[in-house]
Image (cartoon, rainbow, N blue to C red; front, side, top):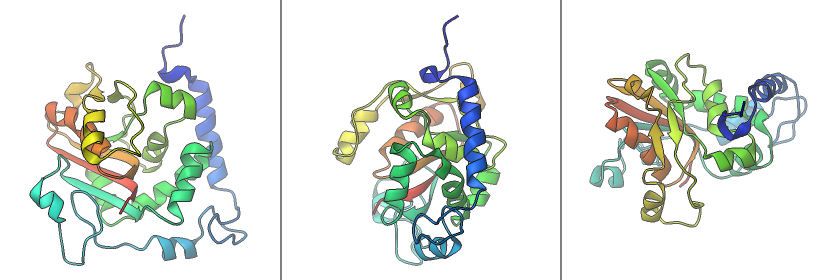
Length: 245
């Protein structure tokens, strides 16, 4: 019988990877930023220095002045997200660590990065209130190349019992986003997500929390929110590790 699982990755392989990354996360190692030893992958001093909480727009997580609830762009053009949270700004050392996590076959970063996400202001409340926690899916081709979905690994580590990895689906691959403008990204991702037709009714009237690693223009999260809105979700929020300036 043909293997119909996403990207042909076996269930045993995924379970083994999850077990190994969990074991690795608990072992002492050298801090990847300051190189202190022994430490976790990210020591407490580096967490305190490089992951300081600050004021962010409530609907796009962009940095804003203290006392400001929403940025001007979200006030002029309300986004399809009711709320958006980010742990850090994309830059040193997070850009390098995320590259290891995503592109250098190092899923062991999931535990440390997800813990940073849980510590973001408002994150634990958002996770606890969510009826559905949905990782943003990769296309089959991207999943086949990478071997794992970094958003799924992060979502698993957030600790919600309501994490559903197969409700939100990616319908197709899209052109690489890095060189595109926001308008081009939105066109590029139009119709790129859908809900599993057999499970879509689960979103009706629910509070949904989308999980991804990085938010740049918001095009990916906005495209992922669209089918949830169409299915009747009453509140759609997102949490990411890093928000670009």
